[in-house]
Length: 146
Image (tube, rainbow, N blue to C red; front, side, top):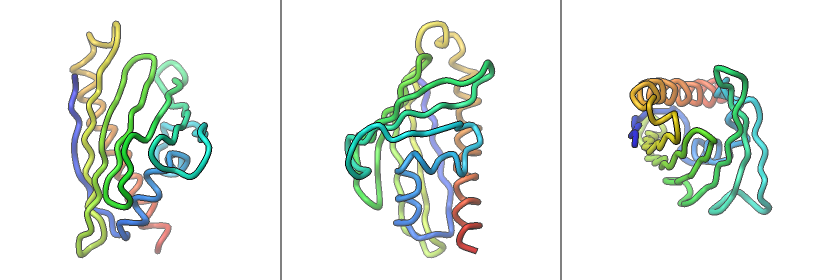
């Protein structure tokens, strides 16, 4: 299993950051790797909400399903993501700070099949990718507010 964690400060209110990031349909706005996202469950975004997304890969695209497994607006939510190559479970925690919001992430990544052999590469690339995704969120929210 791979553990990926980090944090970033975003100059926006915690409620705004939470609402943006918990709704996966917003991710293409700040993550260029996401091709499309569709909400596949009914009702408002909350516990049990499911999404289907396509992400760019080296050979094309991969489909993933995402489910919100915990929802404590505006401070914490957890999700479970399944791809053919791996399962990812994680938590985002948001705390108000004088400058806006401190967001922390913690992911547990379980590669499957042949991908287990690539665990060190996945760990390294995964950590870099997460930093890039959340830097994109920071720029998206802060630029939108300006």
